[in-house]
Amino acid sequence: MSARGGRSGGDASGRRPDSGSGSSGRRRADDAVGRQAERGGRAAAERSPGGQRAGAAKSVGAEKDRGSSGKRSRRAGSVDPVREVALEVLRAVRERDAYANLVLPGLLRDRHLSGRDAALATELAYGTCRTTGLLDAVIAHGAGRSVEEIDGPLLDILRLGTYQLLRTRIGAHAAVDTSVALARAEFGAGKSGFVNAVLRRAGEKPVEEWVETLAPADPVGRLAFEYAHPVWIAQAFADALGASANELRDLLAADDERPVVHLVARPGEITAEELALVTGGEEGRWSPYAVYLEGGDPGRLEPVREGMAAVQDEGSQLVALSLTRAPLEGPDGGRWLDLCAGPGGKAALLGALAAIDRFQVDAVEPAEHRAELVRKATHDLPVRVHVVDGRDSGLEPGYDRILVDAPCTGLGALRRRPEARWRRSPADVRDLVVLQRELLTAAWDLLRPGGVVLYSTCSPHLAETVSIVADHVRRTGAVELDTRNLLPGVTDLGDGPAAQLWPHRHGTDAMFMAALRKPI
Image (cartoon, rainbow, N blue to C red):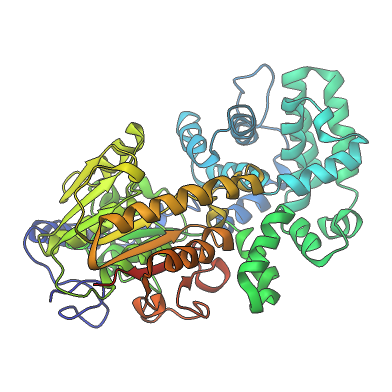
């Protein structure tokens, strides 16, 4: 039996021995480490805050006296280019349902913002998206009307200004004046006066007093308001925590913070230790391939550019590793399947692990544009991409290991997708559980007797997690393994047999996973 995810043959950390095609990767890793040593301390100087909250706080402190002085805007009039970029992100999110984390990097490059300016623009854009519900309540109170009655472009400016007043250390004068300048450049003097009036009312109280004034009276509703979550999501978290529901405040607080960047070191190419040395990061706590970065643009890092590493939450790494660690009945024939592969992060990690033993991974993705992302992520790995519906893939049964990382509400990754919490509704859960059940059933039909399906979601919602698994076990007689045993060293995973990760406990997305073995 080969070394895979902590099984026999690896070292105590669970890392793989180098073999086969990994030798060229090892040389590249050694070269990268050597180049890092030559650069000496230069890497530390290059590591800017890169949008993380700690770096942004320094920028915010420096912003107190900046006011609206900045480079000439692309709009008429002179506005701060940092606020202008943040405002354009808010507008794209509101008008086009865009994702802030996809829009912002391009704008930063186009406007040549870097360092503290980029960090501040990131903090303002993401923070405003994340706290929209709280901001809207304060704006409505100050405006004397509901936010639905305020023109969208004007509401974007008000949200941006209110966020600065309530959630940053930017001085009130700078927060108001820069917002008024944005309104004046966009609409003229008339509406800029409205912005000025609403923001001055918003700035009359600190955020704690606004919570006292506007938050619902019930405990869950109050916490949801304070930490900028829809009530139904906060209640879903409390339900999933169960007997540990007293941790809800800590969970919501962790979910309200921007996370550090997680990298994955590709097995056979570079170790986490080497990746941490090259990037100036820190080795992860739970996955033997994880590295944490406090700041910077990971896309510019040499190991990422060369395909030796990628951005991937440590929780997602643990999902892929759990599948490879699950005990089978009978030998592993090397047929693995990722049934919901887009955009390809888990398929790439599975492919890298499979390559060590000359195994093969099939990856299913029904959307062509997402299938192309899977191809790019796995282009030099033993991964075949199939552009088909996972519920009716036409693939030949007999797989040893199948990952069903099912489409879900994504409630477990809200901190990485700042606008997502305000787009989801309970109706989404009802629609998705049908799809989740169908995909798990399809995977079961493709699994050989004695093989294992790893069902996972990036959501802790009970309807998407334990309810799906319990229904499947009841209908099929599946043997539910204790998934916690597949995560050696990881603590506080719940009562079992499934495993639940949490941002406040593990620093990861709230990934759920359950391992199911097919009886022989």
